[in-house]
Amino acid sequence: MTEKNYGKLAVEYAKRYRGRIEIIPRCPIHSLEDFAIWYTPGVAENCRRILEDEDESFEQTWRWNTVAVVTDGSRVLGLGNIGATAGLPVMEGKALLFKYLGGVDAVPLAIATQDPDEIIRFVKNIEPSFGGINLEDIATPKCFYILNRLQEELDIPVWHDDQQGTATVTLAALINALKIVGKKMEEVSIAMVGAGAANIAIAKLLMKAGVDGGKIVMVDSKGILNRERHDMERLKTSNPYKWEMAHLTNRENKAGGIAEALEGVDVVIAASRPGPGVIKREWVAKMADDAVVFALANPVPEIWPWEAKEAGAKIVATGRSDFPNQVNNSLVFPAVFRGALDVRARKITDEMIIAAARELARYAEEKGLSEDYIVPTMEDWDVYPRVAAVVAEKAVEQDLARRKLSREEEEENARRIIERTRSIVKLLMEKELIEPLS
Image (cartoon, rainbow, N blue to C red):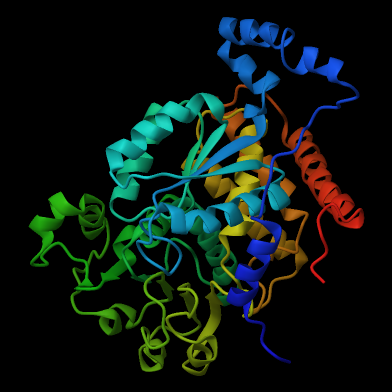
């Protein structure tokens, strides 16, 4: 079978379809007289009601179902700092996934600044138009600062998918991987290769989910993070998030590089630079029996899955769809926002995303775990309303929801919204209002 040139097709189709998304009406329009309701003079009453109670904006405008996908283009995919305009196709793609998988209307906003405080000001200024904010492809360490500030200062959910999305699906995969190898979350030792946004967020979430932080060893480009490393004082100022990791992890104060970090550990989670060869098979061979290897770099994992298996790994996961066990953020963010939006949540908390991870893991377990199936795939449509339901339930439980829905009510609600989106796309394709590919 000839391998498709997806890059060439992406350019060809983007020009043909002139982008990936558009805005179409939600309301019926039978005649121009209808605009007296949808616009002036009728719209003035909508404004008056929202002036009296701002929460009415979630009932009377698109805000109930709309997320801004915000980027400065400073760390796009595997491309690096390519700027906002060049990063716009990725944001459009993200918006398409939001809509098709979660029924969420997402607006790509590529902004012409890379200053963290200006980004914060921008997002705060657009808050009245949206029900949630998805930060995307923003470089570390400023991404932590931006997320933390906006989570504190906005009254709608703020999410950085490179942090929280990756962490959620990684936790789900680890829960099931450990079930297969018969090890307990609170007892395993973990090496983390890479100390950027993804792995720092993963480490923090794993600790909240029961992993002993002292048994985590994190490696960056200069070696294992430990409290006595020569650059600790500088990191305290230049990257306090990495400095914090050095003090929360590595109880034994190990030093060295990736080889030393992997020796004897149960799990390696790599979210670093594309491989292969970043992790060597002889290093995997020195891990504990029934080792778990997550090599998440794209487009090429830090070690090829077959190399890790040949070296003795029991479970291997990557970020690619053409290998088993894809650790894929797209399983998470559409459903998490679906649940958060439906209850008009004010925040997305760690407890909400741990609930999402556990539901993802539970779904895969119900389908039947194996060494090659530890997390659902994007074709497992039923998982999205289920994850949305547990997120909504947790938001209500934490008193962060403006609207109270039970888990059962939200699962049905989410299913209906997602199925509506799929039906609309199918209908538009059948009517050739979306032009066929061929």
